Length: 146
Image 1 (cartoon, one colour):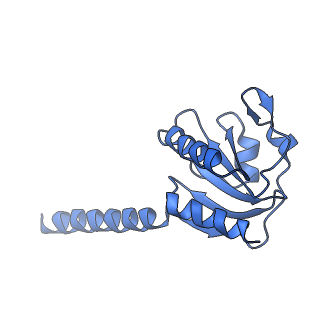
Image 2: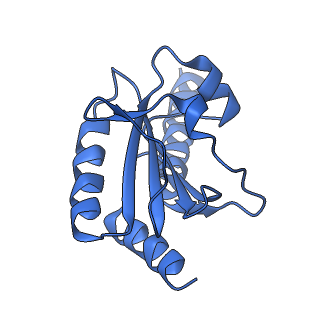
Image 3: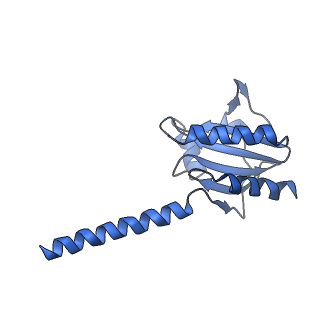
């Protein structure tokens, strides 16, 4: 009986530690040193029914979402607001629910996942999970100063 209680306690502590570790890493920008250039034609992304064919003048927030993602809509709203207040910023949302090719190509393990691209479409940073607004604005600022 004591062994079972100790085992349950250890499992609870392990789950708590993992959860805290996961939360600490979610929403933070991870720099991408050798970022790929994103090919917009392969994404087949559109905004208001029009295919997206260019990047933002300063930066592009490329958000990967799925149909079942509960925080993807609020992330898209946040990025939309940032796009309106930053003239050089563009937000592109791509639903990868039926695009496993993109999930594999960009190593997407959770949604939303955001790739922060420079004005040439090179991946400079990536954010897994719900983004923190201060993190996004800091990454945009870095690209504005380049």
